[in-house]
Length: 442
Figure 1 (cartoon, rainbow, N blue to C red):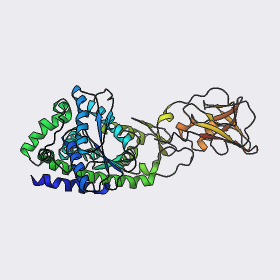
Figure 2: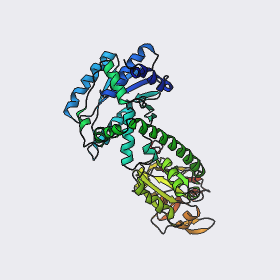
Figure 3: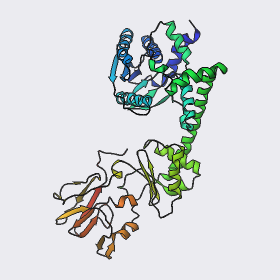
Figure 4: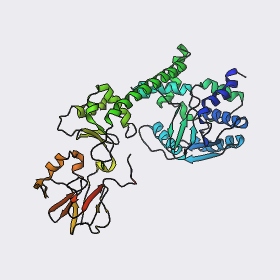
């Protein structure tokens, strides 16, 4: 038996050392070579080592007739190894990239099944990492993309771990042959129309024929780029720390950054900081679409520019940049009078309003700003609402959503704005909660 086969269990155990105290180890088990070797290794290690409970998960995508037999194969393998198997069937959304759609469907299931203190283990290896680097390089990826697949990341409430990234496919094949393992050969893996298959069967053999260590060298480059991305992330955190000041409107709990510290950065550092900040909020744009950020930066001081992204919009207003998504992108609609003043009034796509203190006498209604509104202030007389909003530096995107309380045609209050939100003598105020508490933020 080759030495690499003998050493493989110890290498795997070393890579998994940080997760030995996890509640469960779930193995993503496709039935292919990689996951078959991983499952076999773990099942045999569990006989001599104290490991978390092992469970296997097989995802049936239903994309080809041959796949209908795979769940039974996987069940047989798991039964022989004494590992429980869960089979999940998913519907893959049609689209331009079937590979991407299948992956999204698969990982949606993995995420839902990975609970707190759980780890999902997948079988990607060093050759997969090299293909990922080459694939992303050809798509013009930046440092983050060229860093390849991380050895670990958050998934669901637990973690995703790839413990075989330092193992070659050749080593996995040698292990499988040494132990007489059988595995599924997916016919689609031979289809050169899929980009990864073309790289695997046409490009990588040519490269390794000229440079035998090509896959190892490329995986090493990915590791260098992961380290570089880590430094860029640290720089982003330093730059964002200067911009993450609290906004003056405490009730406006939207993700936002102070504009001045961002504007003082170089263009490259701005993009780095924004990429880090936006990553959990939206899919990041490619290089060509960062022109929207440049337009936002270059807009006049009194302008309110907008950068539209996949899952929302970035607005610059009131000396800050704000992230808007979901309800904030829909125009609110009001209808009818406020009938039960003692209860909160739910507003379509705009949270809810409520009174503190004894509400004023009705009939009352909520409306939104149309322009030309005038409000009477005891100490100042009649004042134009636009000027009052300017004085309080209310961002432009909020002004059309601020609930206004009317009695007939008289504007009684503007929700949440001190001095405009009620009647101090009568002891009532109008409060607006822009989003229901159970909605949270993206």
